[in-house]
Amino acid sequence: MILTNLIRQSVFAAIIAAVVSCGYPEKITVRPDHPHKVAIKDLCGTRSVTPLCIPDSLQTLVPSKIKLDVGGEKIFILDNSALGILVFTMEGSFVSRITDCGYVTDFSLYDGRSLEVLSGTGDLTSYSLDDLSILRRYHLDNVKGVQLCAMHRFDDDLYVMSGYMDGLNCICEYNVKDNKYYVSRDDHASIAQTKNLSQIIEDSRFFDHDGKTFLFYPHSGEIWTYSYMTYSTGEKVGPFVHPMYRWDFGEFNESVNAIATG
Image (tube, rainbow, N blue to C red):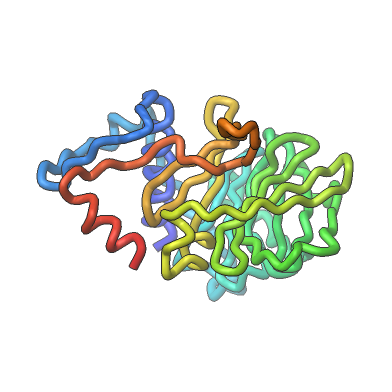
């Protein structure tokens, strides 16, 4: 199960990178009645499978739904209790289990230097990729009622997070230098009118490509980017308020949207 999910995760990342790198227009045309298969060799230059050596004492913590990241010559996997992150070498040997950040909501790697972890309390913990020691912990005293779900470190001074509150999608920012936390509520129709909003936001993921930060929504396949929009009124809003890439299913749009918003 671990190997299968690891392969799926790698293929998914490669597909997303291919979509972004190919410079598609805002609408990506899809013909469900004319399926097109893409060979994995066309997505990945090299492929490898790494068996993970999991200690017997931790076998019950192996997740069925994988959340992982790779960097600093290490593999990081969130265990199924969400109370720890399993760490392996690139050869699959077990290194340790990080358990001093509470309930883990999300995690990601930053700039090849640190592991960034978002806890259920809203705390942000930064670990060194070298020795996994804690570099810094930021405590958000008040998350302003937002249920935070995903997190990404944008640069040395800024974290971006997604969540939901009162039936609306929220994009939050935490400025490290100023110790300021901001919330932007979004009423974008494809998100706000969806019945299973919490599940959609919880499954959303940030990722970097070519020096830019993107946010992927799995229910619609939309990819949003970190940018601010200025309306004709002069009002500036953002970030992540407008999809950069949107799927166009032609005559099947209505049925696809019904599934996405159901």
